[in-house]
Amino acid sequence: MTGAVDPVHPDHPVRPVHPVRPAVPADLPGFLALAAEVEHWFGPMVAEPGFHRAVEKAVARGTATVAESTAGLLGGLLFGPAQDGPHHLHWLVVADRARGTGVGRALVEDALRRHVRAPGTVEVVTFGPDHPGAVASGARVFYERLGFTPAEAAAPGPEGGSRQVYRRRFG
Image 1 (cartoon, rainbow, N blue to C red):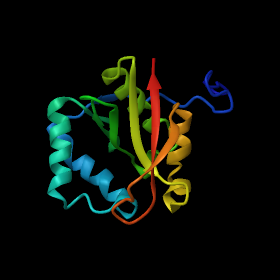
Image 2: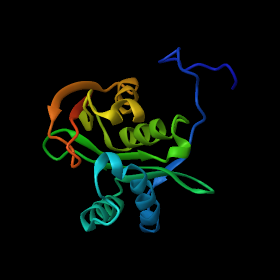
Image 3: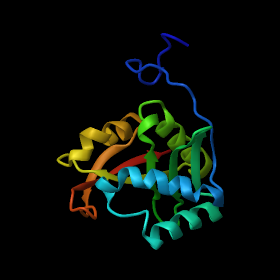
């Protein structure tokens, strides 16, 4: 599909679609490997029992998804379905080697398709505008391209960096 463009964002080339599947218990080591790549931005996760429990809980309830290749996980996502408020995209990490290839978009679009029904709202907390990870990771632009809009500031991250809520409304 050389030269193809995204009809929603004509200035962006179409990226290959990455297969996404619900995570299974055997994916925990892959989630930990992904977490290790971003601990410098988000604080400790790999050695934290709470992170392990969060992954295991999301896997058990069917709200953890992964994208993989023959070399291992390319990305992982933990989604929090709404109880009496907005849905939450709790955790999204794409392996360094797969950034910019559409893995993150595939994971988010899959989670939205599986778990969100209009009317509804999805929130994600990402880097604040002054955080070094905001540019290096491309997270803010990534969420904006997926239709999320910047909202209020959130509590600082575990490393002390600024955070901001991004929100997307459906219906």
